[in-house]
Length: 469
Image 1: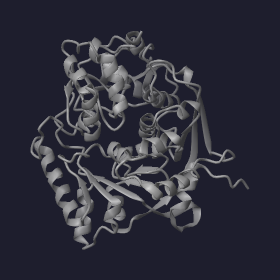
Image 2: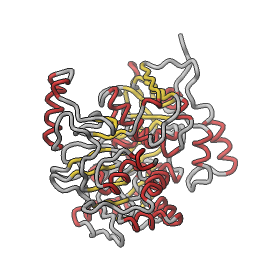
Image 3: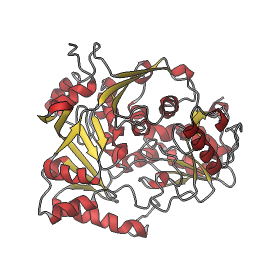
Image 4: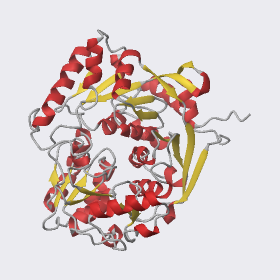
């Protein structure tokens, strides 16, 4: 019997409090991240049953989803969010949990600020009442989203009853071509194996293209694992990971850092480990990607055309394509490049880190946002925002005609005033393009930061490589 373990196995097995038959385990949770949108009922449940948070020192509260992102924001800047913001503040105070409030210097989108501050670390189990918690797997952690009842359960017990998933490895070979980013790898993979391709699996990303990728790119790749159907996405920790974490505020220091590092080096998958499913992709095959429909798997290279539903391989897919084409206002066979856009959004837990803003600013510099286009940049955290301002990236965007906002989820889910109006077309660096996701009747095209920046300057979907040349 092959006893070689995968990265996922190494972390899962180390956190089993009680093992049950059939791969079911009571798993210890190292970090519990919470935000204002999915925690209120869980806190109410604690209060009703007269229970406390078992390990408040392992729990973090963050304001990020429904707050305003305009400069000078307050609790009431977006009135629909005010009750949620104040409830989280009161709950954090009552239950003794560290809160990153709207005016905290380290506030940000939970999946952005937790890795950058060292709150989440390699080898940890991390949960949050948000499906994109898989982002944090880019550090080499088992990180996944949970429901509100599970949020309450972790508050009370610091454990969860879970069924162990199967293991999948996606290997990206070779190197990325100019204009191609980690976001393009995610979209290409989802387009290739579908949004159900990862269901039931914990997915590890590996290969030469991943080894060469920066830490923030790995977080982007893992962020969209849930769009692949995987609750968990992971990249093995290595020197790139350690360089990213060293010196961060909540990471181990001194002798504890040395001990942690020695442990982290034992985590990567054994070369002899066997995966239940494996996908191999040559990175050189991948061109800049952009979605055309209402699912992340409705994606094409920017040089391609809108597909013809008559060529769909199943009746269900044909109906899905027909509906998406109607909703998006498109025509089969129409080139996707050249579509006029109304809004551009650079932000979200997928693409709002400093490297994303640097790449977009480099393309924007010296240009102007096209007439009739509203473009905004929303940094993923206050830390990212300050770093970008120190580098002058904010001036590049402002001089070009972009709006520059405070940190938060913003237009990603249309939960605050940052929305796309009915019938408007938006190129966004987010992770979901569902009907009405960015506002009722909104039409969303998912793309990388540089593709979004190109659309803002040209006023239409544009192959970014033309502007790079």
